[in-house]
Image (cartoon, rainbow, N blue to C red; front, side):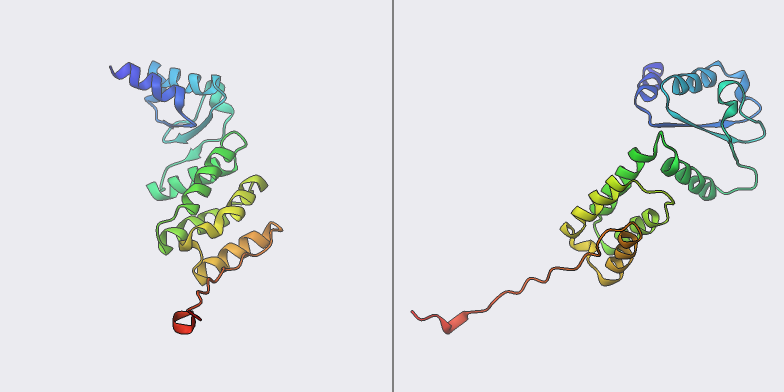
Amino acid sequence: MWANEIESALKTMHCLCAIITPEFNNSKWCDQEVGYALGRNILVIPIRKGCDPYGLFGKVQGIQSNGKSANKLAEEIFHILCSNKISQKTYLKILAGLLLNSKNNNEASKWLNLIKDIKSMDNEIIEFIHSNYLKNDNLTDDSILKIANEFFTKYSFKPLQKVAVVEENIGDDLPF
């Protein structure tokens, strides 16, 4: 049943983005969902689309959506998620996992560039990335490693170096 799906989503959400239109105020469902999120101390991000947030979430600065592309709105939401004390750690852990599990250089570069541009990073997350970084060969490309090391040194972590594995070919030189 659809009401069970909504309830399940409300119980497991990490954030709620509410698009505030003039019709929003007329919906008891929308009010209940926002109230549920606020009651659970979940980050609520109002996206203003012709109307301002009101009531208990009126104190939250909404994102103005007029004249912005979906990509621009997504970028603003991303920066809020990664800087807000309620959501920051959860989303930074997710980003760290995406970086450390990158399947190729392009993916690694994408996640690393997102992470390095976050204004305030948690040292625990940086330590996690730093200690697991060299376990993925996709992160050791010279250009990607250079960006990673700039990020690490910015937060006073030692630069990482690729570990070269040298295989000795002993071939026919065996004494027996």
